[in-house]
Structure formats: C-alpha cells, structure tokens
Length: 413
Ligand code: NAD
Image (cartoon, rainbow, N blue to C red):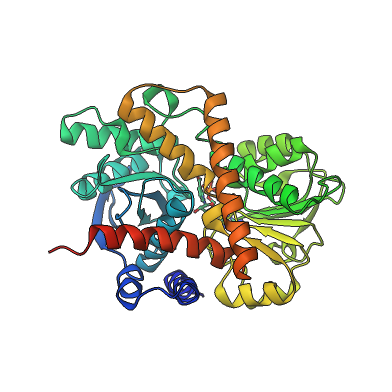
C-alpha cells in the first residue's frame, strides 16, 4: 500500500527542485504546521462503548486560514490527512484563493453507524478540535462519507460552544443555514470545466469522446451528469461494490436513482458487470478517478488505455505511476487543479457567510468558470514553457505563491 504522505512529499520535492526553491523554504513547506490527534468516545445506540481516533492536520496558513474536508473512513490515517492537507495548500494556491491547507478525519466505518451515532461522533470530534478551527483559523468542508448534514452539525456545535452564530466556520452546509448555491455540484462542475478547457486548449473536438469514471459519489456523479449532458458517452463506472460497462453509454440519471435506492451501482440493468481492476483497462478517451488516493499505481498504470486522466479524487496517481503514464504519453490533469471546483465554491460560501449577503447559482457558476479557466490556462502555459508535466507546473505555481507569502511574513519570532 502506497503511503500518501510520502507521495505528497515526493511530488513537492520534485517541483521544489525544478523551481530551485531555497533550502529553508523546502524544509518549511514539506512539513505540516500542526497535526492534532483526538479521541472520539461514543456510546452506541445499543449501549456499547467505543473510542475512535480523529485527526486534523493544518499543513499551511501563510495565505489564509487552513481549508479542507473531513473524511469518515476505516482507512483514515494520520499520514493520509497530512497528505490531503498538503494538497489543499497547493490547490488553494494554484486557484489563487486566500486559504491554506487543512484536512481531518475519523478512523471509523460510518456504514456501521446510525445517523444519530454519526451526529454524536461528529459533535464530539468538533468539540475536541474547536480551539483550532474557526472562520479565520481553519474552515472544514465535506469529503468522503461526510455531507451537508454533517456540516450542519459542525456549524451548530461550533456556534453553540462559541456562543456566536458562526456559519463561516465550515462550508458545504445546507443552503437553509448559510450554504452556497452550487456547492454540492461544485467539484463535479470543476472537473467538467477542466475537461472542456483541455479540449478547447488542444483544439480537439469533444464529439464521440468516451469517459470512464472510478467512484460514483459526490465528485463522480456530478461530473458524470454534466459531461453526459455535454454529449460525452460515459461507458464505464465503478463504486466500492463493483464496476459496470456499456460501450454505448450509461444513463447517469437512471444510475443515480439505482445507487440511491439500492446503495450499489451493480444493480443497474443495462450494462455488463466487471471487476474493479478491469475498469482501469477499458479503452477510453478520458479516465476520471473519483474515488480514493493511490488507485493508479505501478501495478496497474501500464494497463490504462486512456488518452487523458482528469483527477477528480485527491492523490489517485502515485509518483511511480505518473512516470509510467508520462512514458505512455497519457496526459494527467492533476487533482490540485481538476478538483478545485469544490474548494473554490467553498471560498464563495465563506465570503457570502462573512458578508451575510448571498449570490445566485448563476453568479456562482459564472465565477467558478472564470477562476477555473484562469488557473487552467496558467498551468498549461507554464507546463508548455517549462517543458514539465501539468502536475509539476501546477505545483510550481502553487509553491511559488506560498513561498512568497512565507518570505513576506517571515518566521516568528
Ligand atoms: P463520496 O464518499 O461521495 O464518494 C466516494 C465514491 O468512491 C463512492 O461511490 C465509493 O463507493 C467509491 N469508492 C470507494 N472505494 C472505491 C474503490 N476502491 N473503487 C471504486 N470506487 C470506490 O466522496 P467524494 O466527496 O465524491 O470524494 C471522492 C474523491 O474526490 C476523494 O478523493 C475526495 O478527496 C475528492 N474530492 C472531493 C471533493 C468534494 O467536494 N466532495 C472535493 C475535492 C476532492
């Protein structure tokens, strides 16, 4: 199993070297500023008692408060949240939004917990990290297995503890309590804009282009819906329960209905069933990893038959796999650019919360499209100028911005 923290540090080292970053900045930026481990005790509904381990990593806050999601998963580790928090720093910097990077999680299997157990677990976790989060300190958001309801409990717990109405402590909330229009779809919409930006820049037509998606949650579903509407054929999709394949295209709305009803995509009728390993071998124009990190590794990168990989997930391609894909001339649009739609609309949500003035969905989507296009063109032009991969170019832009902020602020004391 690849260690995501080592992957994140390797990526940083490569980009820092290409950038010629000064030694003290390399030492400073390759470590998180702060990592907190907390116990999350919980009485289950049946009276049994358990203690989960929770984490929050703040990689960097030079350009603004830490920003990043909270994940509930049995494989959450401290190294995973450290890696995800570092990627958040670069993502916010490449988008040029005024945040640093954070990430948190609880090592648990939420599928074995009732909604009331998840609520109590969330509230206790937040009360344990309340002293390090806040609208100007660290602003969490949804990630794997957390959603708008989880964010509502976070906002309520923090507001109750602080005594202030504090919607800006967390983003991805329900609209009724300060959430933003468009936030739920934002990551998928950002992936969609990124793919269109790529085809526009390379002057290729999108007609008859085929897409395979790994992971069918928030990021995967919204990207699929928008891309299908645009005319792409989504021919293969997996989730944690299996893979479906139909070379003529899968009906995404129907599939979402099946997934919501039965909790699995494999109950969709009009498609062949494949194993999850086989998904990566399907011949396609675009592959969108939208599940978890390190799913494309030295073990399977060689078998991939796509021309373009657009990383909706964070860290899906390992450094070794990156090299194989580069040799195979497969273009990889990196996570810190491709899935930045989520954090960008989170930024819009935070701004709206701070000013208590709310924008329409149209305004949000237009602003998102503009920022995504600007960041995309910055990254692709840098890659072309410096003869690097898109990942290295994106990291170089991001690291340069964070390094400049560090230099200007200096080191205290
Ligand atoms: P989610 O919990 O809504 O969905 C995750 C999906 O991945 C589920 O369909 C699950 O069944 C599937 N999955 C898990 N293991 C799998 C496997 N081995 N093979 C195939 N599918 C598998 O989570 P999400 O919010 O969609 O996040 C997915 C990825 O996108 C994560 O890497 C996350 O960090 C990243 N991301 C999410 C957001 C966001 O706003 N939600 C923003 C940026 C990045």
